[in-house]
Length: 144
Length: 456
Image (cartoon, rainbow over all chains, first blue to last red; front, top):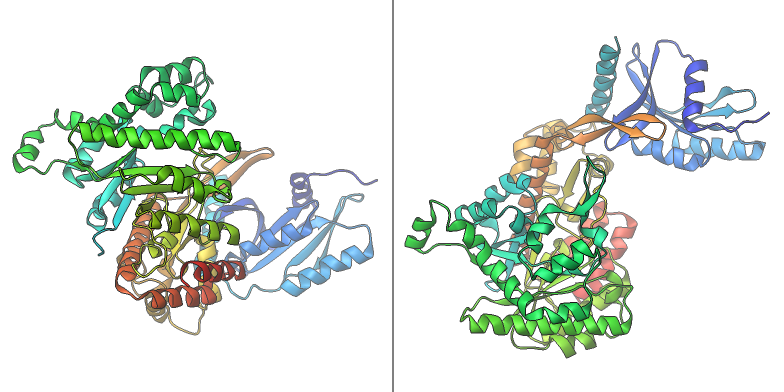
């Protein structure tokens, strides 16, 4: 049965269920005047990926993710899986065109599918990326 | 510089002082709101005595006509609302019934009530604008010196009491207030005559943007403001920029300036950006004769208080003459290849100076490495309690706020210099071409419309 889940709960499920090798997950990372829902930091490859969570309005998620793309190697969105294949395809095609990765959240199974891998952001400002990593490392030190 | 132009810098809070002192030679007069003068009289006295002796006080008499909540603040400890301390201090200088009605009856004054105290109001406002600061100077050690060398601070212009024309007013109410404004202006001018003083007098027209579209505004202005007893007229149109407003608003604003110019009055923009500075150019078909800008912000401003919002790093993008969020400015630079690996950081820095900005502040920060542009974005993370828990955001460091303010003021200096020295056609050409290069489609359209109307 499908249940009503907030963006925050969606992120919590994601953190519980999704694991990637050598990857650290950090919530609420400040970038410019915004806060990124989740940043995946791959220490080995020294890459950062921003993930925006949305229950509805997937286009807004793409917009938000792209607005800070300058600071990340990759940007992705995690949205509720649409019921129809056509709607799923629309999201996939739209994101493919702009290089944004997509996770679908199946609210019945409470599970995630990584349906589209992100493309490397072309125009990164390394100064800003370094600031993001610096924040992550400081948070990490603080947590320890 | 054209001698009939007044460049004004607004002084809003004590944090503006550093920039104010550094740029004191770049403007003709400092302008204060009456409430800050009332609240910090002694500090203001020092400021105008030591740094800038030409000052203007905005009497803010429109505070009597707003919903009481617009002048209230909440006491953090008790949770009770009370009139803001700075407003209270100012109200103490006005006729007693103003404070009584606002504080005890918690309501604005009616036009009838304002009419009944008008003589006293005019006298108190005039005294406040011309004497209040002096009353603090008299208590200072340096008073004797100032008097000896006769360099004491003086009002550059005195502003008559005024009331706002609001969008929700009926035509009759608009008439009532405009009549009130005329009476205040006349009485104020006559009061000064009786005192045998000769400060240039200004009216102030404060209106909601919607009033600009009132079909008869220019007719009313001709009828009620065509009076010899004043020279300048401050314009404050709520949250208005002639670059960014609609086509209709642009046309109406043009008509308003034309009407005032034809009446021989000199309009001054109370909160203006580059659009206002351009309109002071001597070849413009309709003209402003001065602009006030602030240290922290310079352009459009709402009349009634609005929420301050969370502080963010901002940067004045000179080619577009617009203050924007740091990430927006960075995006434009990225799009134009300023951080690409095709050139060295030093070459990019040279391009930046040639194409974007070569002000002292930028040179001090960027030096020969474009990556130093990051200084404008220096920030500290802080925690905000959101509905679903804590989130982290960035707020600018004090240093970043200051360098952004200095950069802004250097840009303003350059704008004044350009407008003063360059031909109108050249200025318009630069405006259009820079917008084509760096602006959004929307902004290009707005600027083209502006040029069609104001620079034809």
